[in-house]
Image 1 (cartoon, rainbow over the protein chains, first blue to last red):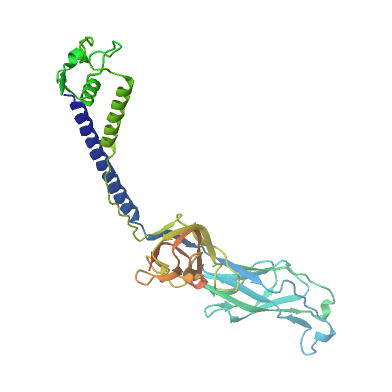
Image 2 (cartoon, each protein chain N blue to C red; image 1 turned 30 degrees about the vertical axis):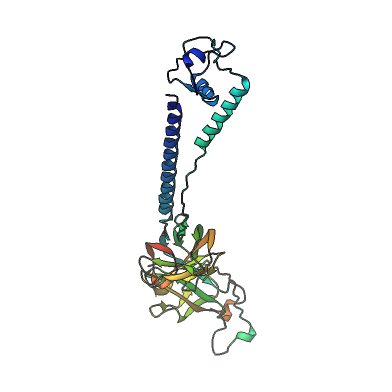
Length: 181
Length: 217
């Protein structure tokens, strides 16, 4: 009976070793499984993109200030004294349909006639241009038939000064507008 | 061998204190005595005979040392275990969400190309331990309509970025390379830049696309 405590101790120690080994094995197994799960990685990533293109209407004129001078050097005895300027270009971009460009002068009634004539070399096949003589302050259609296009044209301004009117000057503020029909 | 009755002789030390029966039996064995199995630690007797066992400190210490040695031998055990460590191939790609909506609303007069818009608010990170032949490709779930274009650029410190790459028509099966020759390691928080463009003749537009980035070899 004196050996019982020793045997009990040995048996307890054997059980402890067995339990420790079992726990260690289970821990290693669990770690391996977890690592495997972590390694089931994603090699792709996705992004959701949304797009919008709004209707855009943009217009501009290259020559911001134009002077028409009627003097002795521009007088042709066969015609009325006049002056011409074609420095300016009208440029526009629109992605909308059924657009036109109107033009209006701030001067209601000038002493000298001012005329504007667009040259549609790069305006697009469907665009049509009209010659406008400024007589009042109402907008007039200058270029029509614009459809999802970007274009430009030369602006020819001409002023006529009858000699009986005499000398003087007219100041015009001309506004070009890209708008819908 | 001399026989002693422990009940009679070892229930008390020489000083009259009760002894542990186990210690007493060890001591008896050490000193060459046979001992009875019956050991009543509660009974108290006194050492009387000439065969009484003289317990002294030296014997007690020697026996204790012997027991300690024997006990240590019991606990000094070892167990072996084989552990194998495996590192699998790792290649992981992640992005930080979706970019902001790409909206075109302006243009330069006289030009067909409307003003291009870009977004670089998102980034990506990669980790790979495969080799230096890894690349990132991109594809869209549906091609863009003619007149609209989507470009993608991925910054990279581990590979070679192809710059702005048109992915407008990179549908499934025709993914395009965006970054190539990615070295092993991690590349974190690299910028993603999308550029969306449209021409005036294409008209207005509203839609969405799903872009898939793939880390592959």
